[in-house]
Length: 529
Image 1 (cartoon, rainbow, N blue to C red):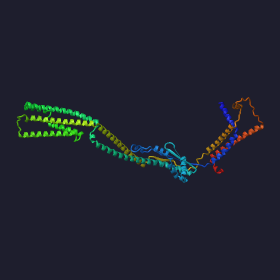
Image 2: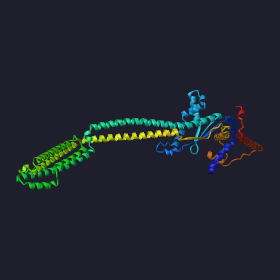
Image 3: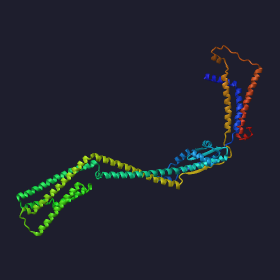
Image 4: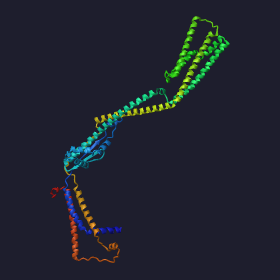
């Protein structure tokens, strides 16, 4: 610490040697600088404050119907782009400042000057202030008023322009999606027409194959049951023919068996009609199984009608006819009818089993084609669904955009209230002559001190023997003090007094300049330049 203090004293001693140089530099530079500050022209500042009200009563009422735009964010965005070249050129035209620019270069300089001099800031919640300084108070007021107008119009115009752009974009996209939807519908229709035979049934390939196999198992069970029933009836007819059994026995057997099936042909016809109805739910009239069932049903109906006609004819010829042979016995005829019905049912079941086997074979043979077709169908349906969903979303957004436009055109969602309108300033707001004068005075002193320090470093002087010893590396055994005569002491004292007086005069001049600037005395007109 002592070394630092000693080094500082060394530098201060060197500067003190050239103290008169510091005073001379400050005494010469300060008046020149003060005169320049005094010659600066006055500038006038005009300002305005505006409040932006973004809270509308309709905002909660229209939530969900119209697009809820963030008005505060929109205002902040517009303040950031307010100083664009287009707005600055518009400001120059509104204030007639563009008449000063005769060339594009001069217009560029004017735009740059306006960007630097126009100030826009925010204070508080949604309160903005605009200010401008110029040598002409009327021009300062016009610039602020014009800037305020641009600020309001740009916010309102930007909202309308954004809405127009959004609406045009939505309309363009809706037309494009409509065209794509029509194309997707056409592709889907053509695809279904090409693969109508494979897409006519509901369910996937595996579901239809599984259903066909399950139907085959059921048909095989029905076929086995029909074969068993046919064999039983055939055995009974053989027994009747071989044994020649009496009519009462078979009539009793027929009555007992008729308890289960009173009219076999009618019951079988009803069953086949139910089966045909079930098949028509899944297949068309041209399906092989349906055609076979229709033929079997027609054959049963024809046999039933023939039996009825035969029975009616016999009853008309003789109501008490006596059957003497087995072939003429009604019981025998009824058994033949049952055998014919069983054979018809057996044929229908065989046809059904063959049809199901053929269907399963076709499914298994066309597995790759069917899977490819199903995958393509799913892709087409998925693409069409996405296009349709996006189309509906765009229509909803377009309606919201139109509702938002109606709200903005009929109701002011953003209101601008001028709190402090711009006024023509009566007193100048600048330049800050007091601050500039202080800077001139301080700068001249710093310049003098810097010059004195530089000379002290160029022409150093040892003030004690310790410094001499450290620099030369030679031990100093002693020193001789300077003895001055009274005349020299008087001259030194007068020099110090003169320096102090000069410094006081410089400080007093500084204080006088501050007083003149503080009192706003017009001394610029009295200066020779």
